[in-house]
Amino acid sequence: MTPDQYTPEDPISSIATALAPAALGIVRASGKGCIELVSKIFSRPKALLEAAGNTLVYGWIVDKGGESLPLAPAGKPSSATPSNGGQAPRNAPLGSSASATSGAPTQLSWEEQKRLESERRKLEKEVSRLEAQISELEAKKSDLEAKLALPEVYTNGEKAKAVQREIEVLTSQIDETTAAWEEAAEKLG
Image 1 (cartoon, rainbow, N blue to C red):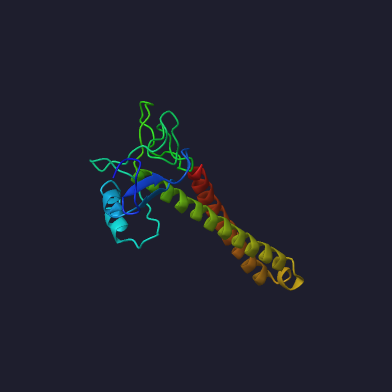
Image 2 (cartoon, helix red, strand yellow):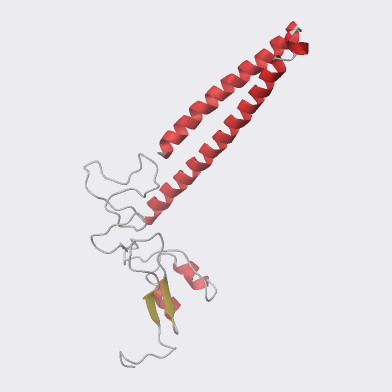
């Protein structure tokens, strides 16, 4: 085989996505033995070797030491690549270990990026859960306040006191939940 002549049996690989910063890049491989060749430089060789044909396997290209290689074009770091100019991923929580205390750029490993993304997703879920809980508590409080305005409740001292105690408990729960929401939202950035 010469460089100008390739057959369908020859292993080849090529970048199948634009050569620009992106959240995902695809490398296409074909030909006899291509999967075995690519698995030697792939972060998840077992997953790649066990995958069915014509499927995607998520991972990254690694060097001989197993470190992920920077995939962004030189001078154009991206938060979606291992080499990102020392910046935390755009959606990383505040306080992440994305930059050294000296201010010098550092590289986040793929594992660190995934950990930060996982933390962010957990915080987003927690914020949503707390918002729903606050809404539910406020609706219950509103119902009790409406109940307190009913003549059969406000004219009955015992009933009125019981409803007022429930309102106080809900108010306390709303305050506690709101404080937790504020803390989670602040971490989220």
